[in-house]
Image: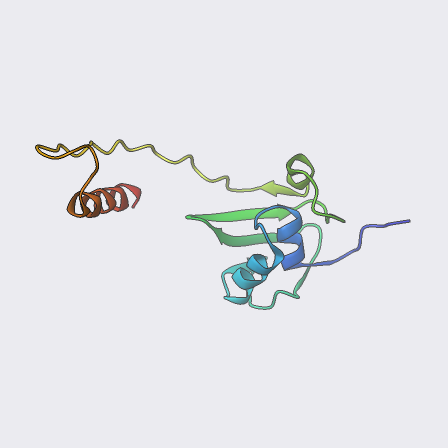
Length: 128
């Protein structure tokens, strides 16, 4: 006799929809003010969302715009979680940039600390 509720906490819904691994991470993101419901900024993880609400939040390096289609009763498998929302602005695929290998003139194949720093800087620059 389990009926789906009319409203659900936003942190719990984000966790059910598998946008965050834990409910604590979802609550932390909402509590930091990085989430909007119907273009209104919210800062309380206990904010109740319902079917038809549009969520805008930051996930990884993307801004996600999601319309709630259903409220889940549990955190199920990925196909079940994807049925809870409609993605209004899907993230663009990452561009794979090739980082050239460091040429070493001496020593073995392991990079030195200096080489490692250069690699990290090159990778950071390619991701931005």
